[in-house]
Structure formats: structure tokens, C-alpha cells
Image (tube, rainbow, N blue to C red; front, top):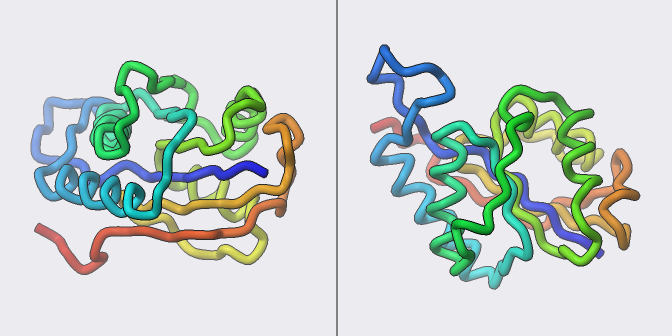
Length: 166
């Protein structure tokens, strides 16, 4: 059995118009939310065997903050360039390439791809992943390479307060 956590990056800033979308940093509120979600994962006794992240600043910053909260060495985070722009098929390729020895994996990325991946993996999960949302999915297969559509079951859904805007 495997567990995959899909985690969307925390709230990012649009304040610096000279930055590309790829370079956008987290807002102070986004950083706070990442710490909160990391602490909630720690309370749930989530100990990742592997963390994979998009290289975009907002996603990697979110991954680094949550890794720190979970006592996971930041230098062990695997960065996959294609997460930034790819769709479900490419995300599935990345996940299927994970070594079978890893049981709990945190996967940091972007919408709409992460939400589409959630819908692909969990037939009944028709929610949207908000910024800094974390969805734990229980998967029945023994090896990541055998991951298939509609195989997952949502076991946890964490998100910051959705009404905060500052």
C-alpha cells in the first residue's frame, strides 16, 4: 500500500511585475499557511519517504517549509522541471517512476494539473485543491509503476482557511 499527498503551492505574490510566473515568491500569508499545513501533517504523523516538487519558486518554497516542519532534509527534495507545465499524463509518468521502496510521497505542484490528477486517481473526489491544500490519497498497489486511474481513496484533506485574503 502507498500514500500520495498532492500539495498545491501556498499563496504567491503578484506584487512584483518584473518577475515571471515561475519566479513568484510566497506571500507572508502563504508562508504562514505552509507552516500550518506542515504542522498539521506532523500531527497526523506523516513521515514522507520522498518529497517531489515543481521548481517554480512558490512550489519549492512551500515544499521546503513543509519539509522543515516534518524534519525532512530539504536537500533530499527531488525537483522535477516538468511538474511546472505538464498535465495528468506526464504527472502520472513521474509518479510511476518512483522507487517501490518509497511508501509515503509528498508531491508539490500547481493547479489545474494537481486537481485534474486528483480527479483521475480518485473517482469520487470532485473537489478543487486550494492554495496550500494537501490531499492524502491511499493507493492499493505495491509498486508505483502499477498506479492506475480511479485507484485512490482520499484519506485526508487539509487546507488553510479559505476566507482569508490578506
